[in-house]
Length: 287
Image (cartoon, rainbow, N blue to C red; front, side):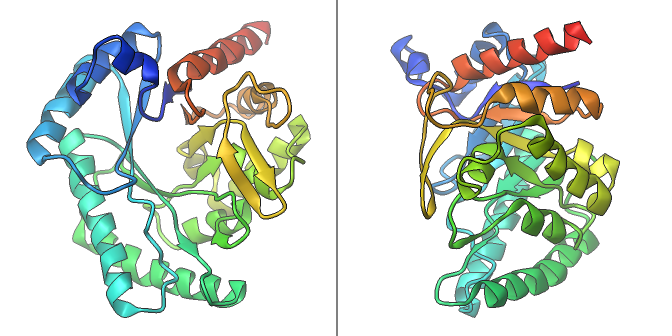
């Protein structure tokens, strides 16, 4: 079953007088959605008690929860002190996964910095192999929990879809986050056809297998891009930049995949998530 929901809440949530994360579960449910991603992008600024209470409310509302780790994770930073901080962000993210009873922790793998791309990718892969094997050995994750490196939208970031899929081969607890707005930005708008989406899932199934691909996490939004990739997120009603959701929906149905789809539109995340859910259901009903 494909689940749909927003990353965070739109201005609408606050304009209606809501303030707390504890009010989000029923609000999301009443919008006709069934998933939610809470972002710790700027740091873990929540108590574990609040996370546990929120997690129980999401569970009662039958909303599946994903978390996004801080944006400044970088497995390719040569500085060992900074690498230790990156590991700490993942460990803390896992603690919040368990507090929320969430199942996906999305994170950005690395940036090249002063390294060449090959150097940054090698360092990232070596550290993935070392660090995530230790996570496995410590049994910190439940059977249904995954850590999800994300495809990125800028040329100096590690995170093409091929790189992310290959990094996910390093551990059984890793599944990809396919951000199709990011992928489209790197491809300079060339994620246009159904076959373009098929190519990505074919590569994932070939390298990771069906189960890992089926458990993938998806971010979807239209994104303005330039020569160096992503510039800014847009709403789904944008008519200049892509990608279009219909093509992805058709491929998911053809391949019998049931991932979670999180909308990352600029200001209309819940609104656009519902548009995507309706598009998916319309295509599914035709098949």
